Length: 133
Image 1 (cartoon, rainbow, N blue to C red):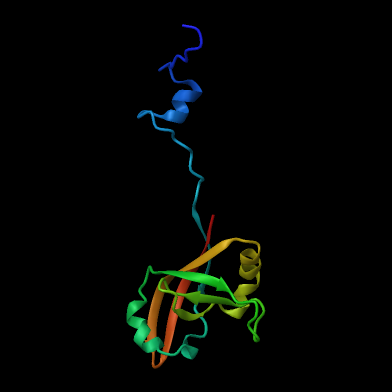
Image 2: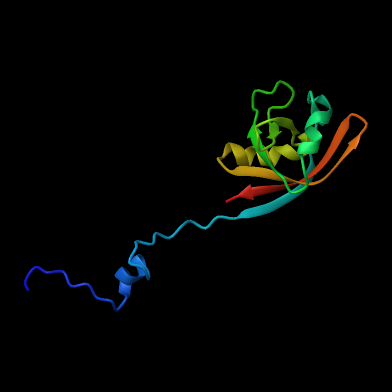
């Protein structure tokens, strides 16, 4: 019996890694979304077609954030897009300094719509800003 590997069902490290079905169970990293701040979407009145887009933007929808460091008006600009990649506005300038620094350091931020209303041709959208970790 020399040279044979004997598999023990008693658990230990092998049992922990292989789990109940014998498959290798690699622990997954812990992910969570951390609520940071209440804000709104700025600049919606400058978005062409925002009135046609409004019915497709709903409370609870996720909005993706992208840095726009080449923005001539604001070096800390953060563009907000819907899940289809359509630009809907910006994180307000007064709120974007810390968020832009986090994003520049590789952190993923996003928003969720908490309320919306059309006011003439202006779409008012309130959002919660989250850090995905």
